[in-house]
Each structure stands twice: as structure tokens, then as C-alpha cells.
Image (cartoon, rainbow, N blue to C red; front, side, top):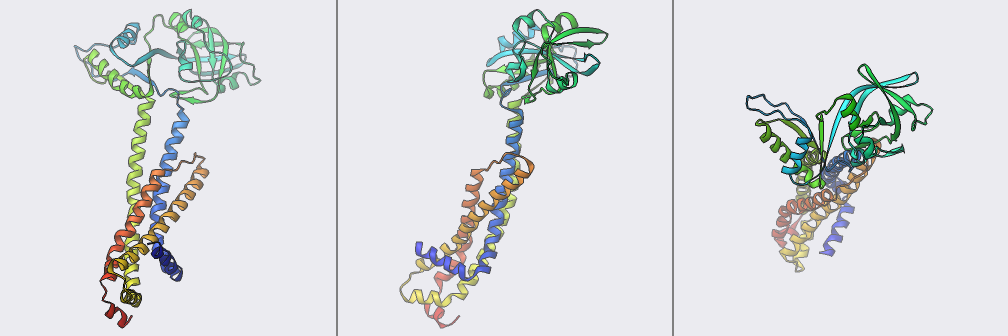
Length: 397
């Protein structure tokens, strides 16, 4: 078989143009599969890197749009609801409450109007949010509702163009009431989970509950699962529990980054498989071309086949010779297709600024499929060659 392979390479060298045209369909098919799957994987990885790994174990719960019924129970995100979640659902590590308010932040003659978030102690750390300077809230500051604030980089650049925000006091105006807050921390510019920290401001929820809205219900409930894998399960559990609690569907909106990423992976994989299947058609077209070329090759090499049979070659030897030659074309085409596919993916993703991710399973599957195509479409020409009568084969071209 090794000798047949080297003989096939010699025949390819003698018929360069014919060999190139035979390889072209295989190369295009394999390269297309590699490029499609690689770009899909790179896009998915870019999204994952953008959101980071923090927050994958967090489930966000907010009010839904349930249809009002006479017997429907209104759900309120109060301390009683927090206790019910802990008591009735498993796999919950911790629960945070969050509120938001529109506020104008002022320092000197500079002001900025934005949404200010009131969060509980440990909320920012849970999301993996990092500080460029200063510190986070302490549990005492949250409990007693002290007037401390943590700002995003964009807000700090607007209010303190000369830097040095930590330790200074800013005026936070909500409606007609103003409060003086000490800046205790400045956040790094990052996206972590569902939090974009660049244009943000955080105050202790204890202050919000004492000075803004006494004993408020939370606008958003953040439920931390014991692991990212359990977060996806918690989505369904919380939805079912809240719907049973209120007696109506769509009582809450529940989502998690882990669930979103899982759905994104499924969509990307489905699209990649569909597009790869379309690209694989070119492999089949290339296989038909190979079969035609091999039939012509058998016709041209009738005397060679006759001589080999006259010297004692069996039909199996002849069949193997042409099968190896057909498979060799797609073997070389598969290797070249993988190299070209990876190169094109690297160039395209470099231009787009994406991280290069190559799908090794796609390389393996497309390569094996290309070789299979060569063997399958080489069976008919090889069978024709094996059935040739040596006397008739030697009688002429």
C-alpha cells in the first residue's frame, strides 16, 4: 500500500493541472468548514471574555408582566420574600437586593445625571468588580446607611478631571433633596456579568432604605447559586416557585448569564453545523470530480493495468492501487484545506480583533470526511480497473 501511495504521488506530479483541479473542490470544502467553525467559536469566546467569568453563578429576578386575576397574589421583594426563597429552594448561596434611582452628581461646577444603584454589602465583590483606587463599602456602612459612594471611571473623569476623587465629597441630588456623599472608591473600567462599571455609581442600600424610600421593596433580586452549573437550574426553580406563589404565569422575569451563554453556545453550534453541512456539499462535488478524473485515468492507463495483471497482479491489487490514488488526492486536499482554513481564520479574526480559536473537532471531522469522499468516489473507477481483461487492456489504449 505504501508503494501504491508513492506511485500515486508520481502520477500526480506528471498530471499537475488535472491533480490541482481534483484537489480544488476538496480544499475549498475543508477550508470552508474550518473558517465557519473557527469564526463561530471565536465570536462565542469573545462574548464570554467580554462578560467574564464573574456573575455566572448569579440569577437576576425582577417583576414580570403577569395577567391580573382576582385570586392572584402580588409579589413583593421584601425580607419575607428573601426568607421564603432560602427556605423553599435549594442550591442558593446568598441573596442580594438592589434598587436604582435617578440622581444628579455634582462636584464644584461640574455635574452628571445618571442612574445610581443602591446595593448591599458584598454585592460588588460578588460580581468580581475591581477597584482602581479606594475601597468597597463595609458592612457597618451598609447597615447604618452611611453616606458613602463608589464611582465608575467615566463619572470620575467627568467630575474630577484632575484625579484624586477618593476622600472628596460630592452632592447627590434625588428630586428636590440633596445629600453629601464621600467618595470611597473608584472602579476599574470593566464589564463583569450584567454590570457595566464605567458609567455607574453605587451607594449603600441601607442609606436608600433610611433616607430615600423607607423600608423599600427591592427592584431587583440577585440570587447567587452554589455553583455556575446550578444557576441554570435555579432559573426554572425560581420561575416555578414565584408563579405558584402568585397563582399566575409570568409573575417574574428570571435570567442568568450562565443560561444566556448556554443558549448562545447552542445557537452558535447549530449555525456552525448548518453552514458546515452546506460547505460539505463542495466536498461531495469535489468527490464527483475525482470520480470523473479517476475514470479517465483508468481509461488512459489500460496498458499499465494489462501489464500488471499479466505479471500476476490480482484484481484486489489493482483495486487497491486506484483506491489509494483516489484517497491520496483527498488526503492531500484535506491537509491543504485545513492549513488554508486556519490561515484564513487567523487573518480574518486578526483584522476583526478577535481572539483566534480553532475548532480541532471540525479539523478532524472535515479531514476524515474528505478522505472518506475520496475512497467512496474512487470505488467505481477502482472496480472498473480491477475488472479489465488483461488481453483487451494490452490490445490498445
